[in-house]
Image (tube, rainbow, N blue to C red; front, top):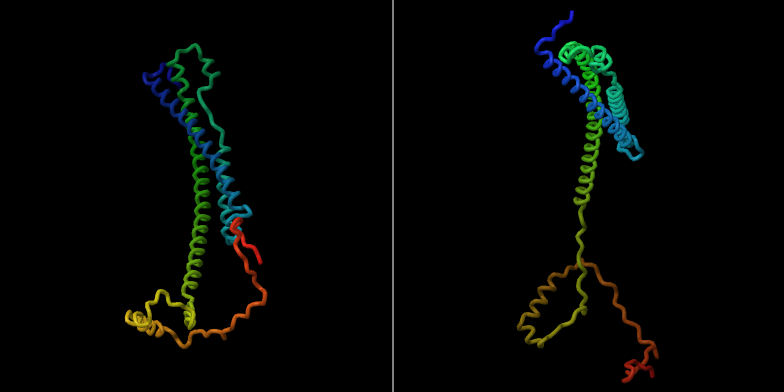
Length: 250
């Protein structure tokens, strides 16, 4: 039977219970917002995975099936968490109005049981919502981790293949080419001071050293050809005009 006279701590007990109920309702709103974020993230990730340009188009079938199953379970868990919306609050205004003849202290003490009932009721719903959200987060993280690991592994394998190809290319022996021997009359003497002075300055000696660099197995030259004779009347004689500074043909 309910106590007729409220105890001294009735107001404090009522405020504590009322604060717990308000905190539960605030947490419910926050978790509902997280459920919506998880649903949006799952939809975006699903579009990324199963698009025509997705990485999974060349992935093994088991990876595609596992990713689809994990992502589907994550979306289902987030939906269950979002759809769990049955909560209660206390005290009900109509019930309080029926005892309007009593003072505030008595009313708080009288409806303290309703607050406890609402807190206990909502706690079960809140715990269930948290479990569904935790499962959805874990499944979504597992999906991202699985595909991220496959992407990193594929990238590393591609880099190793490229490195192997580059190494094989670098190890390919390059044939040693020899420069053809110089043409006998393919050079001129510049600023010569005469044979005697040139010999004193080591010109002949330098030529012998350079000639020692020639090799018998160097590629040979084709047979020399003689330039054709000039075509008769194939040129003109011109004089420069002192006025227009142009050439006139005679």
